[in-house]
Image (tube, rainbow, N blue to C red; front, side, top):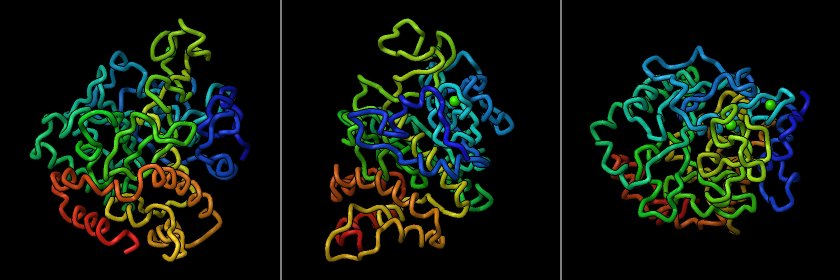
Length: 386
Ligand SMILES: [Ca+2]
Ligand SMILES: [Ca+2]
């Protein structure tokens, strides 16, 4: 299929780093786009309400999967959901930007209203999560243990929804949950200390800047699986995506030097909120290429995605092994999938060191995942080559 050439793609360095001199990382999806675009994959975006009529989103927006009981109120957003949506699924229509999975269908599940997560809305959204192939969650808590706002008893039905979607979604292969790690690296919290990010069915995504270094804000935690491109700093967001149309959203048109693109777009999105949909978009491509893999359930992750190969250990690349474990045969599509995730993984591994992610198991144990905690402890003790 033809490679998209939407006019703002030269600003989407996360898709093709060659468009930007100081960028050393991208998602390496250009070779993939020759064959895959996310067609047939349904992505639920748990966020603010998406502006579904946006000219670059309307074509891919699937209102039939909207969730009864949520408030689809156009006045409740400030641009966050619309920006997330564009990274995943903006159309390759010769206008604006192209999403990573530019033929995937996207559906809004509004759980953030006026910048605050509504836990009751989240519970409702989760109860219907199994209708999506991929769910993106670019939100979390700024306080440890969610500031006490979510009790263990309240989480029980949510945990059941995760379990149900992971078992029943995608016709029994499992809905893939992807969540932002958080932007609280310098705060007295940790990504593993939030219910949303500690949930074991979730792929938790940290952020690296265009230079490949860990972003200054990206939260630490044992629960992190991968990192993906975003802004280096919260003060200089530089992810180009869709924006609420007209004066709404991040780009009101009042500051062309700061945001020199049409008002329906912005170059000023960032944080792990932008990194998470990068992975959701990639997952959508993966699922189109091969509908088989089970990607979720954290206890498998460290073994699959451990730090770079060490001399003297198995020569088999861990991602290849992961693919085998997922029950797939090696085939022509494996190479890009492996290289893409390895790129992300290696960044994470290099920057944090393999011992670091094992420090925070108290948080995971707190959420009743003692078995996972034991496995992490074992990996910490014995090495995850096992
Ligand atoms: Ca477009
Ligand atoms: Ca705007």
